[in-house]
Image (cartoon, rainbow, N blue to C red; front, side):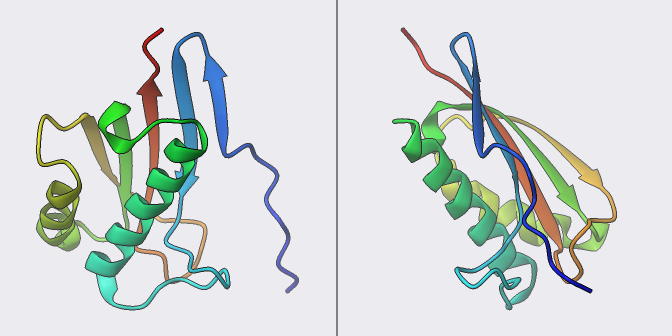
Length: 117
């Protein structure tokens, strides 16, 4: 089966909001990172950070994050890693149990930020 490049925008703007598409825990070679939910959570948050930085923002500007987990038993380990990235007031969050489209991925995250003008 041939891997195809997905057709989507990394970021989009609507008024003062910046939307970041879902980030899966791919390494630089487009392989899912090893190390379980902790490593995959860190990778997704690092990729969200890179996307925000491309827009002149940071995770501190995030107002909403949606998380999809493939295994509810991973929730608390995920939550511990997530908390490390938001030591202050975290954005609002929705966490959903779901099957993901990429085999081996245990997590996906998308985010919205607000750029104050």
